[in-house]
Length: 204
Image (cartoon, rainbow, N blue to C red; front, side, top):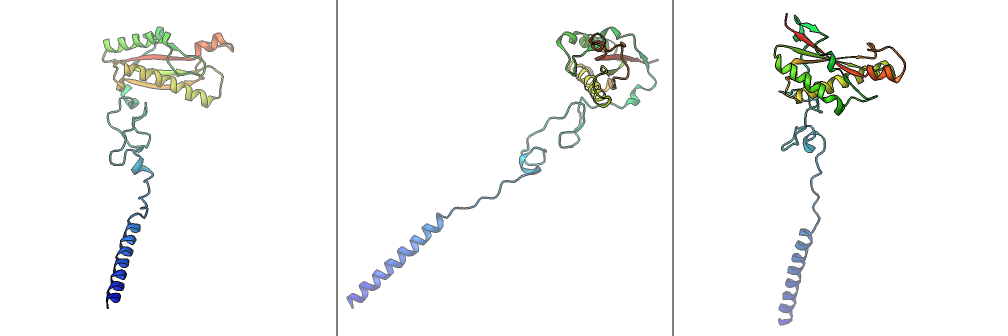
């Protein structure tokens, strides 16, 4: 009888240890986490997730890189209808023409005082508006020069906006290589054709 009770107790203890051991193994089983979210919602790159990173607007555009319209963008181009009924004055700011380096659209430090002078004129004459014309020399394809002329005009526009001029007063247009200031096929002529011109618009 004692042997039977002892055997029963041993079996019971063994069963308890087995159950305990089984629970321990179960709790140590690695848990597979949820896969990281990808795309618009998780990364925040498009600004659509909770706690998404804010993406700055592109200069000269009213949209973020994801294509989401943004409000109050100071670099948004105004409608050219705003120039209707106004008279262009090509001589008023002729002396402030900005010249660019070859294949560049950055405003050189030596040219920045000209842009600052134009800003001063616009501040002193709040009823005026401005058109910036971007130009290139003859080298490069017509399509490329049209794009480069646009970048030059936009760079000047952005400079003026950063000086406190309302972007709704500033318009841009690119003529590429179509309107050279100087005829010629050498650096002397080319350096005068890589330019941004300011045309002041006045009310009649």
